[in-house]
Figure 1 (cartoon, rainbow, N blue to C red):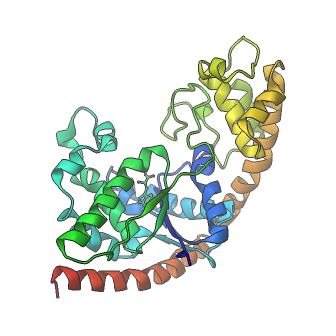
Figure 2: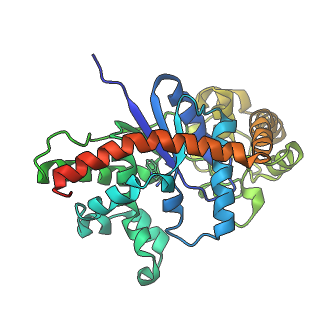
Length: 334
Ligand code: TRP
């Protein structure tokens, strides 16, 4: 008998969720929820590794929950909660700070990118961020973690921590060594202005992304203005790899319509960009607007969203408290 999967994932409440978050994470979560036990966490403690305005943070936490629910996550089936409500995350992270080696953290490329040139000025939290992420996952003894390319290295570190903990304390198999779930959907939605950059909430131009709360008119405008070129659309992938903006639009279309890239290429090869853009805008409006509208509706009643978090935190806490109790015993803490 194969053991049931326990899936854990976290999303940072940084606000302004966009198409990249939908296709890269939320849509996949909804699929995973069908056949697995799932825990979806709004990782507010990760968010504060860089300064967050307190009022905005609170709104962004609620907005992330609203996006979860609007995209189709079911809080009665899966556990939906925010990280800081379950103290076990911080407690286990401290123990992992003592298990992980400085050399391991020094290899993390995301820290190097985020800290930039002046590493001395980055918060300590940003540096040990991956240890907290390992705590998130292992606190629930999760077996599977959906990860995009940018989080693969952090999951590797989590696996190393699990193994080192089990070894150091002679607690074979106490923490499972979690497996990545690489989704077969596109993991990267690129900017509409620059096909080599990831779609991101921090890019200056709002026309570089489709936000989940954009209305239909704005979506149509953004797609109309999306960067393309003057050559005709070809179905040759090698050619399209040199035209990342065009490839990105076709990729998004394929993803939203549930067809393969090959079939999307066949559909558009030789046709005008206006045809591709019309079809793409149409399917974007049909997919994204209902989610955005639902989010806006949910955000009118923040009490209900808080209730969802409270209920989820309670369920999460039960599992977490047990793991913390066992872990402390293994480490020799009272
Ligand atoms: N680091 C992840 C990101 O920025 C978020 C995250 C925190 C996470 N804890 C996690 C993802 C645990 C998966 C599992 O995207």
